[in-house]
Image (cartoon, rainbow, N blue to C red; front, side, top):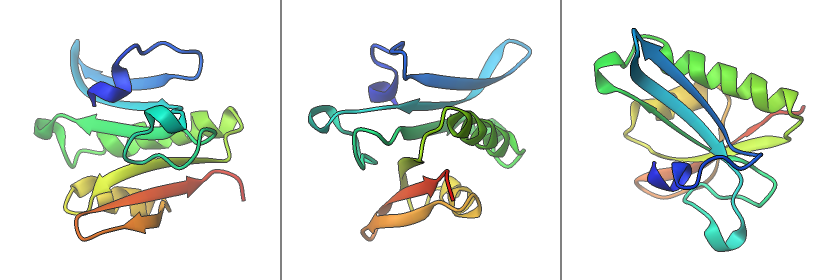
Length: 120
């Protein structure tokens, strides 16, 4: 996640968080990268790349679902065409992304690059 938050604060950077009584329990980030600084889920310089983390003590409580839904709504409002990510296929979030209609665009045995189209 450090690559997604290093020098965070560009006008195109977005972060949503969930906290419980002041304790940070989850965060979802999007950033635009260039070809030279691309990350694992990079598709192109116009597609924001998403990264999400939920404290394992709070898995399976709908927190990631709510954050992902809120981020997709935000990106749609900002008129992005799509959002991308990279995920380990054994990660619980992989099923969540499929539920949100992220499609695999590249894959190997362990991980997948997925895209969610925001415009129909």
